[in-house]
Image 1 (tube, rainbow, N blue to C red):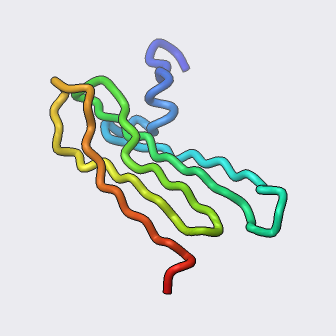
Image 2: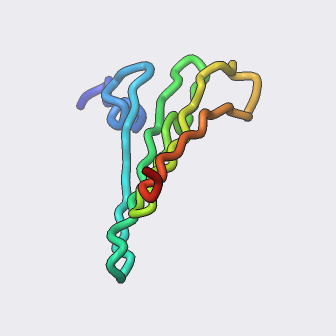
Length: 92
């Protein structure tokens, strides 16, 4: 690796200034309703020297709930605006 060894963010985000990584967990519910899955995408924002959750999804037998970062903020605020959407599997 030498003198220019990558730091942790380089390894996770593949040396991309705005790279992202998606992680997910799946849980068995123990009954016939099926698994529950939580997924999140973490976006690196190099010029802010931070990361934000750009997408969060909960999937279950009842439907999907998603939050998506709108990306309208600047680095001055710790508050982030998200778009909410849901897809209820029980609705036709």
